[in-house]
Image 1: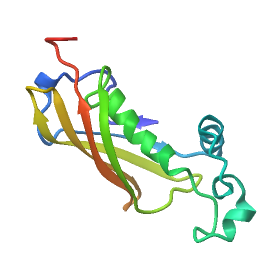
Image 2 (image 1 turned 120 degrees about the vertical axis):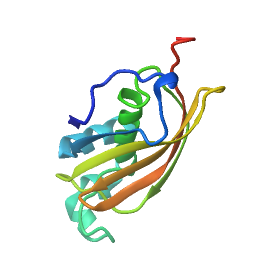
Image 3 (image 1 turned 135 degrees about the horizontal axis):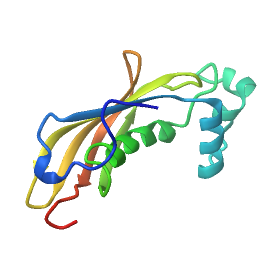
Length: 147
């Protein structure tokens, strides 16, 4: 996995509109198999190439929530990072992710409510120039005053 910044914590007092962090990861067959195991989502479009060839995707795809999990990793590890609590996330799945694709997951700060320690983040995942997932997250950020 390739991160653009060190992992850790950015406290609410140091977060600014426009701040952005990302990671990049190749989604492997093993990732898909492990996600199926943990989630119990064994839809054959994810696990059976022969079955998946006859779908609208014309081949196997990764679970959408596996890709969304990479967005969660950026939020929980980089921005705001350790100590962050998810309050909500909207997701729109725009295109499939296939085994072997390099996914770039990115979050960008769009709003800050210092009084409530809430941060709104634009969330995107892409493969090359294709946006595969987009949405918005609301999180409770850590604070030097309380944590």
